[in-house]
Image (cartoon, rainbow, N blue to C red; front, side, top):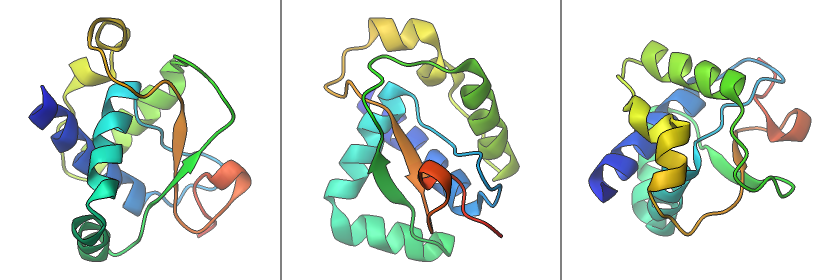
Length: 124
């Protein structure tokens, strides 16, 4: 499960690096956010990943939104992952997974590249 979560986090970061839609942030599920945290803590590897993707994707905590699951944002993020050339592990984005797989993260975060509203997608 840990490998699946980290793999999905890499897909998420790849999609976020390509996101150029102002005001429409991509957001990981709680499970995928846990994998993103794991990636970020290996700062050299994370910086290299972002360099290879052509854009640094910052991690910006948002106001508390414990266990938030916004279906429209999940759909937008899954679409962006597919458009980035990856097939998402849809289970890791599902409400079922959010309630059945225990992780330490209990918060909501957005991808943040160069700023924007609420650190959503930056202007083109």
